[in-house]
Every structure is written in structure tokens, then in C-alpha cells.
Image 1: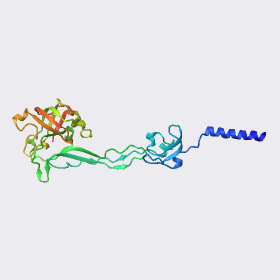
Image 2 (image 1 turned 135 degrees about the vertical axis):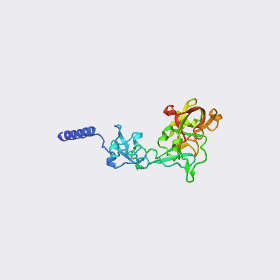
Image 3 (image 1 turned 120 degrees about the vertical axis):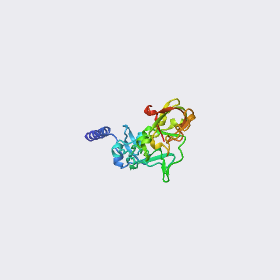
Length: 267
């Protein structure tokens, strides 16, 4: 009787222990697993992050499939991509025409364990240069090429023989038509094109660097002929050849007075 009672007590204690302790815990640390992507072989068995028990994974994809082992985040911490600072802007890709300039950055740390992916490593922005190895450009840039007013802050100035005789001016236009490509400009240096709307009045400044050699006005501003001051003229946004249209010249101003979103530069 005593032996049977002792055996019963022992079994009861073991059962109670299993009930309190639960199944054997395992996970990423015990198996030494930490895998990239979705790897079916990167599997263990134990408590999952959601509190359930069973097969669990130690791969990157388990974060989205919600089947990570309970210790995945501590054993396999997420490391986001790290990139360098931007390089300086390059020069224009080609002289004497509307083209692009570029800047780049490099990857310092690849992303691991569902860390944030790397951003774009190259940016492009529109630009134009008015000189080549042979000297000043002689072909006018037409139709009128425009870019956001902020480009003037970083614009490369060329030497002007007598700058006191050359001053900038502003021309106001009314947009009469534009292509759908303007609204599809999502890059960081082309988003300004999304503000263009038919019927809006815009101000376009002619700065000395945009003047062709020996000229006193910017190409495409409608100053060439008297009839050009009233007729419709073509324009194109630098940095997105699909963004172009037609505008009507309203008049010349001594200073631009349009809102920032509607202020541009001749290139």
C-alpha cells in the first residue's frame, strides 16, 4: 500500500511539474539559427512570438508571416541599411543642351534580419551649361527651358565681360496647356512640376548666366519679335522631357512676384 501510494504521489508531482513548466522551450538561440529571406530549413520548435507553441522560424520572413520563435528579435536583431552622405553634384552630362546632373551615395551597412532596406543610391536633377571646351554655346536652347527657382542658388555662374550692363528680369506667362508627364514627376528634384496647372500665371526669371553670348534676353522668352510678345510659346521642364506645354506671354516685370511654387528660371 505504501509503495503504491508513493508511486502515485511521484507521478502526480511529475504531471504537475509538466503542467507548470510546459513543453520544452527552444528557439533561435539554442539552434544557433539566424537566416536571411524565407528559409524553410531555418526552423525550430518552441514558443512563438504570438504566445502559441509549435514549429517556429528564425528567418527574416518570419516577421511578416508572424511565425518567429520567441527569441528571434533578441538573437537576430534587425539592422537597417546605412548609407553614406551624398557626394557633390556632378557637372552636366553634356554641354550646350538641357541634360542632367547626378550625385551618389554608397552602402555602408547592408540590411539584416528584416531591417529597413537601402534607399536610392543615385539622384538626378536637370541642368544646362552654356559653355564647352570650344567656348560659349552658340545654339539657343529652345523651346524655353525652365527649372525651379531654387536652382539659382547652386547655379554655376559664367564670366560676363561687363556685368554692370547685364541685369536680370522677369517674364510672366499664363499656362495654356501642359502634358500629363508633369503630374507624374515624383523624384525629389522634379516634384515642383506637380504644381503646374493650366490657367495658372507663372513667373520666370532670366538671370545673366542664362543669356547667350552677346544677347540681352533669354532664349524662348518671347522678346525676339514684337509678335512673339502676344503669341503662344512652347516650354519644357528641365529634368523631365515628358513635362512640357504651351504658355502665353503676359508681360515683362522688373522683379518676379509670383508665389514660390510658381516661380521658375530660364535655363
